[in-house]
Amino acid sequence: MHIPDGYLSPATAVVMYGAAAPFWYQAVGKVKEVLKSRAAPFVAVFAAFCFVIQMLNIPVPGGTTAHAVGSVLMAIVLGPWAAVIGGSTALIIQAFFFGDGGITAIGANCFNMAIAMPFVGYAVYRLLAGRLPSVRRRTIAAAIGAYIGVNVAALLTALELGLQPVFWSEGGKALYNPYGLGVTIPAMMTVHLTIIGIAEAAVTGAAIAYLARRHSEIFEDGWAAKGKSLALGKMGWALVGILGALVIATPLGLIGTGSADFEWAAEQLKGMVGYVPSGLSSMGTVWRFAPLPDYTLPTLGANSGFLEQSLAYILSAVVGVSLLFVVFFATRIILNRRANRNAT
Amino acid sequence: MLRLTLRRRDFVGRSLSGMTGVLERALYSEEEARQPGLLQSMDPRVKIVAVLLLILTAALAHHLITVGVVYGLVLLLAYFSNLSLSSFAKRGWLGITLFSAAVFVPALFLLPGHPLLVLLEGPPIRLAITDASLYSAALFVGRVGTSVSLALLLVSTTRWADQLRGMGRLRVPEVFVVVLGMTYRYIFLLLRAASNLFLARASRTVSATSGAEQRRWAGSAVGVLVKRSVKLSADVHLAMQARGFSGTIRTLDEYIMRDEDWLMLFLTAFAVAGLILLDGRLPWG
Image (cartoon, rainbow over the protein chains, first blue to last red):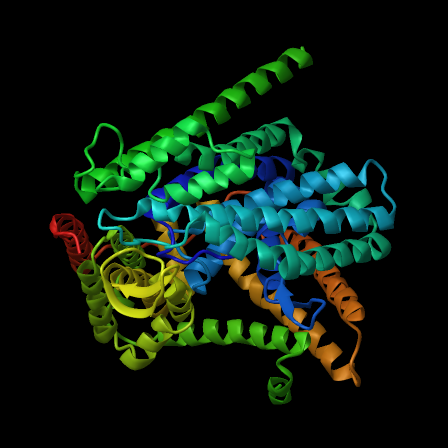
């Protein structure tokens, strides 16, 4: 699931760094606040753990093996914010020193595997495990959480890769990943819904079962319990909400602006909402017969050069990222005010 | 250990060979970075900035020529850094780059353009490799290979400790750099713990075991590692406190930029800006 350099356009890479940034910022603050001087060794050891777990092969029914990502496990044991930092550090080391995953794609890879995956997996686990779970219930909840978490990460990877044909050059040449969503989503999801999802669920469930039986103190007075503030919290849920909205909005937004691959977009929309809006489908035919696919900003002509186009993309990326920051800080201010008012 | 290569298909053997592979790679690049050469003598800050800028150029390039020029620069740097060119090229183009080429094969028949080689011509379907698809494939694979080679160039000429200090000096937050350094250290410790677990199982297994049993064992192994990590982080913290750590991090190193380093930095900046501008002016295709 590690995206290498060259698969994502620079604009996508920048957007993904931007999407990961508020989570990194919040996670560093949370972990420092809870762990104080313990933070550095704690994070380092668990980042190393995250790295090592990806080296282990897990046997899967059918005779093959797959390796787990492990970030849902980390989120359950240590809280999702610690999982964000541990997972991200491991991914950065993999990119810089072992060539796994691209350096430009660090934002995207961290967002998929070290942010979305632990958050979603943890939320599912908490929902299913309830207040005082038995070992069995804990194990099943952890396995389901891991299965859903790894599939969300795979879906995000497929979305990011599948949007790349939008960045095709004017001559119809693929500049980055050449496959649209119609290919990337089935390709990623078939292996993750079957082989890799099962491996992730099996290893997470078994590890939680082992810890719950032999070392139940980890859940009772360990990090998960002691660091209550390491749990999601209001801010975390707010971020998860924004995240979900963004994931849903991105493909729809691209259809709205008209992408190079309009055919699949219309098909995709049909699959999602059951029909293609008549306005969209007629616009689709207009675009299909246009001499040049139109995917520049409205203010720029279709004949504008590469630099202007990239600039336009980067500018729109900056707009999106700053909007994300505005929402993030606004929510933080509101929540802090409310907390202060309640305290007095 | 040698026996295990025979049992690679088994999950224990696979995990062990994966783990020893990581150790081998880390040791090899550390050894390589000790050799004398052009890049080895450069300030790590300059190297990190230069490599990042060149990767960005390769990512922004819309023309094969631009990517080719960047790769030419990479080879030139590798040559003056006394890296074995054949092994350097091999490491850059096998693995992920070869994989990317394989991934692109179906796309060769999907992209529109002027057909060069028609494999199948029937009324409903037409399988043809077009000029645009061939060019796209070359650009895509070239871009991936060049980026991988650039990252490889940095790893092969910079010792891990220098790379970290370089990052620290580039105003990457100190806490982050320290965490990276400690993580790298503990990766090897935990890798050894994990490979001991797997080796112990391998040496005690005499017959085939069921898949369910294997998964349970792998899960327990991960659980053991979690538990050890919790203990390890507590121990490390106590050891740090015993040595006077109170939460602030201090480092000793001080780098001084020499004229050569400035020269290298400006050369890279010039090459990168020039390449991006030229790339924008080239006609399409």
